[in-house]
Image 1 (cartoon, rainbow, N blue to C red):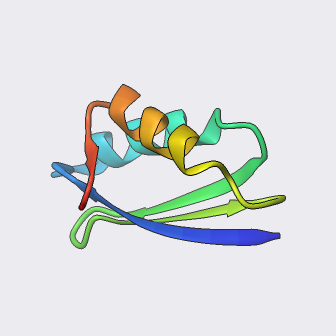
Image 2 (image 1 turned 120 degrees about the vertical axis):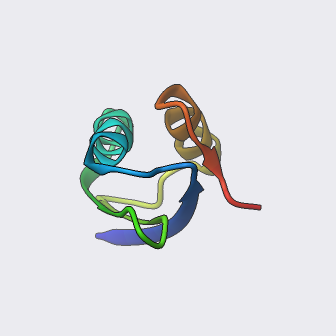
Length: 68
């Protein structure tokens, strides 16, 4: 299993976290997503490393941005 940690900006509540979890959960290979709204940290567990472009697209589909 592979673990990736990213920082997502703009999340303010559990609804925000749920949106990010849902979109990232649809990326092929993702097994689980843990979101810490306070810090913006998102930990993705997957069966193999996930394409960075797919992660960015999923976060943007949820309405948020990856921190630079």
